[in-house]
Amino acid sequence: MRRRPQLSEEVAGLLRNRIMSGAIRPGEFIRMDETAVELEVSVTPVREALLTLRGEGMVNLAPHRGYVVADLSRQDVRDIFWLQGVMAVELAIRIADVITPAQLDQLTELNEQLHAVLATGRAADITTAEFEFHRVHNRIATDGKLAWFLLNATRYTPHDLYANDPRWGQVAYDSHVKLIDAYRRGDRDEVIEQTRRQFTDGAQRLMAHLEGIGLWADADGAPE
Image 1 (cartoon, rainbow, N blue to C red):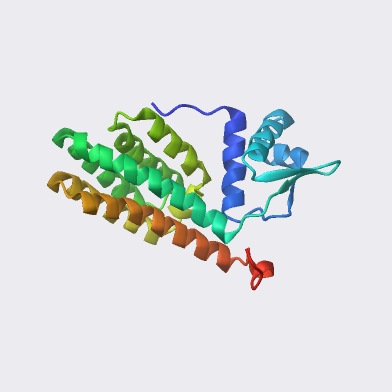
Image 2: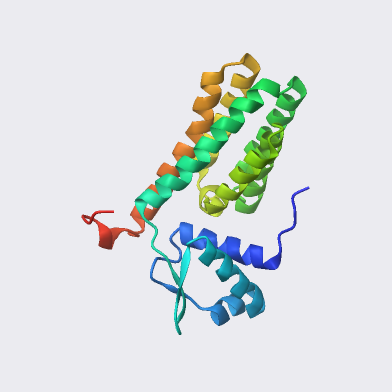
């Protein structure tokens, strides 16, 4: 079962998503009281969430002023998806050695469920269906630590942004189909290609979105 997160983890996840999607921009302050009121929670989980994000380098503490969103560069985005892709490819290679026909059938069923919810346009359902596909996929390998590290790395993916993009949904579904087929045929090169494709596509979409909202407009022309 998918573990129910603690309230502070939920708040951290929401704020992390907003930062990565550019809804809260570098240099902006996150006010604990205002955030608590908005989310209808006490100040305590907001404070704990901000401490978590500070430990991740996503916010900084400005003395006597509160927490301010840290810089997020183009290279930061590239690095996040590069790291995710490296771990995902290694995990997929290991899965290719052990995956069974029954597990492939299960992945096919989960992918068809994703395809069905994509037609509804309900972002929350799309996020859940995509998560479930990869949860089942990644647990096929016996390497629990690697899957755990990958899960933690994907926390920096603004899932809501993708779930609201129909083009992303079609790419994800199509890539899953080709990945499953590659597993069936024992085509390791295609397994690697389709695994990388999802992270390359994700990075490009996020970069285009952040460029589009002018996140780096002030830094254009300056060295990163």
